[in-house]
Image 1 (cartoon, rainbow, N blue to C red):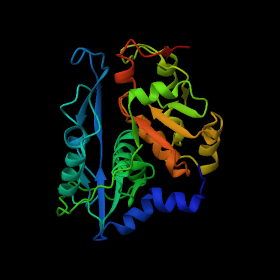
Image 2: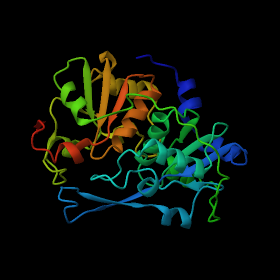
Image 3: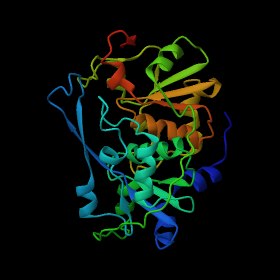
Length: 300
């Protein structure tokens, strides 16, 4: 891995609310709300233990959003709806068609935000990264920071003119359960769980098939990467320290996972922002792993 400075971090990976407000009229800028609503699921879905139901956050967007922003439907447009699990990586064809229709092309710059957890913006960021689009940043602090500062909001619908999105897939941005299983015994690979600590240890009643975590994985909860007051990402030195404490800096590969590849994307985004160039997301995460009794898990 290589670690870069704060100047590159903020210029390439994050934009601040002040900067965004000053550039909202830029013709090449595409701003998107990526919100997904999450509700507890009282029933099993498709024969598996899936603790949450995921629905588009379009309703919140229609109520209020950043001026000129569009809306990205992760559930309906950026997930493979034919898969047995929710929120699965879409095909290249599906992703290209969706992003083209959203108005994202080679000459555009994209800024992403969410009105709930930052993970949703990070998920779209990671998808764009996986398909080779680099001119994309996350709004630091998201909707909460934007509105908390009293910045302008709008209810006016926005639709960017369709563009031609060119996919340049990055091999290794996502891994499957076979690759994770092989990594468990590799000392040079660090597997990081992005879920809250009680779910990681198995103390929580929230389960993805089975309680606990992937064997030999460590825990950096996604929300520990953010300032609890502003929602902004922590300073670079604090973020680096968190991953150094689990020896990520010494790993030849870092694999992040969570419940369904969403919080994992936030950790993967943060690692990439810090200069790690060896990061992958396990897309199936615990929704797949926890429902397969043949795969090793730990508790405690």
